[in-house]
Length: 512
Image 1 (spheres, rainbow, N blue to C red):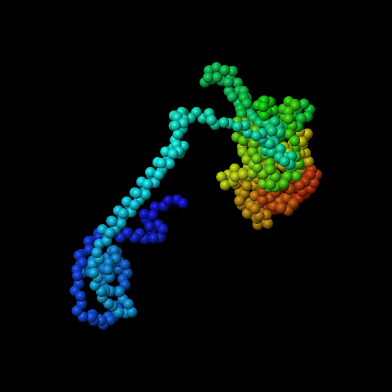
Image 2 (cartoon, rainbow, N blue to C red):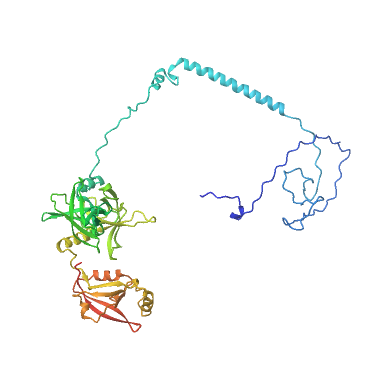
């Protein structure tokens, strides 16, 4: 709890009341003997009890005494009442009391006697303790040998290091431990360096010498992780994430033994965030991949990769499967169904493997929620999706069997008059159509060439679902194969008004 200054008590809804000043104590006046009454006291007639007048504090008509001071004086220590206590409506005078004799001398004598008794007991106990010590020298607090040993400096050589027991790599059920997974899989995990070409002039020192030519020099632009996927045709293929390699011009792969190999781009797919490199090297350790559809929530998994870059290459982290089929948007707005895990996934882990306790790859680590409000939320592309995508990239250079309508477009929200158009579309029953696609070009093989479609026409719905985002279109196309038919709702602006109509379009294959 934070400390708070209570000097101003109004801050907490209280008024400050100063403590009463202590009045100096006064020595009591010497007691005077009262004469004994010669006759029995007479009982006074009861006087009526008049309740005291109650005044509001600091009122203008506050009563004062003869000197003009307020009648409400500061509180003083209690004194004997001016009037005798009231019992049953009657008053009586207290009987006279005789002065008491001082008991101080008696108390002093008692204290001195007790001190003498305690001192005697202590002396006797001390004499008995010395007698016991003389009889047994071993009861001395320090022996001669101990005294001599204290003179020697402590070298610390008496602390021994013991060999720990060998770490188990298999549990009682035959599954790998975390150490076992690391031992089996580490050589299948690689680091990746991504280089881009930057133009550098050779004018020399202030242009006074040199060949006056521009050259492209590779510059390290990023680092990530990868997994040795397979070997074929004298090449070894490395699976990683598309966002790791998509912007690169050249690449290097670093093996677990720190061997560096030149690597080359095969292809990448931004929709699934999977990319593939290859090296002209064989005989490397190939990873084993599992069917990710057999995963269960709560299953233990191990991540191996390069968090923070190659400086921390092949770091091992362990966790559990938190959830399955989590929809996570890719860089192009496509929702991938990913594995959610609490295993530590950091920048540089992307493209690395998520392994089960049989040492098999079940996912390709892809992303995490990076926020101070979140912790332990990482995501991996399921191995079933990753391998299917990678195999298609190797075979075709693109993901085969994927449908598209064959246009290039701009999103409506990038236009200055988008707000007015969206308001008119809402009046026509297309509320929240922020994903509206404004057509710019139509591919030569697209079926839209056979329809009455013009440049700047707008696709506002697919299969009667309003395009509230681009994800609506990508999700609809992901369920189709080339040649399937899709229903599109078109909006056209003519004569300062918007008209809408529906068309049917046959999809074509998306070759990337």
